[in-house]
Length: 69
Image 1 (tube, helix red, strand yellow):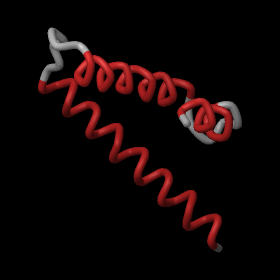
Image 2 (cartoon, rainbow, N blue to C red):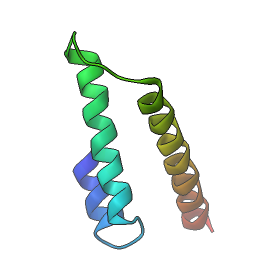
Image 3 (cartoon, rainbow, N blue to C red):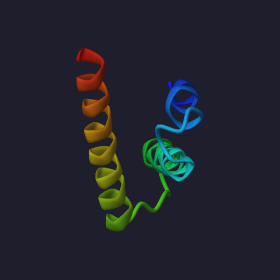
């Protein structure tokens, strides 16, 4: 799924490569939180993840509206 996002949005220039990198970093944090009992996920990590999620939701909603037009 993430590879498809990169292919369709990052590689085409619709999303900046830095944003694609951030997505990968936050997915790694999510995996650590889920599978590594000793993982240390900070409140800042959680805040940054939520902020990134909100950015992607807004972006994808705009993409959806554009596709429906």
